[in-house]
Image 1 (cartoon, rainbow, N blue to C red):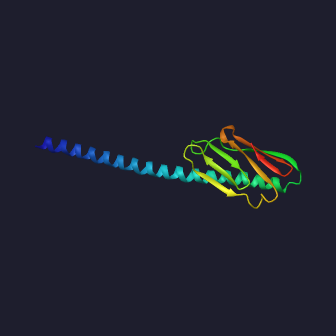
Image 2: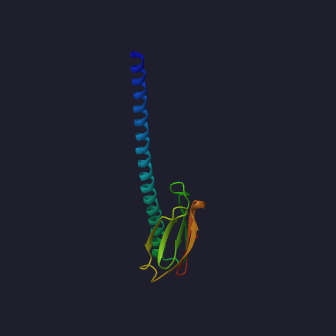
Length: 137
């Protein structure tokens, strides 16, 4: 009987250890998923703000013909993204998940015309100002 209770004790202890491992793994997996989502949302908004600020800077610049190159990350959360601008808004959109961050361009579109779209795979975007047209590539 002593041998059986010792084996039962070891099996029970092993089962408790496995249960603790599985629950810890599940909790950390959920935490990682939530953190990744939050971080990618923050990065999308950060890139949107970066591009918007440079476009605003271009409108303040008195030169009618100028350009600027902005370095951007190639991926956000392991996923590529695109940046587009038109007279209504500036949009950063994740290619796979479809998440987006946008901001209105209406206050600036009274004086300027906006157009263009680019993908993040190049690691940089170019903003051109030609007369009263602002184009991103």
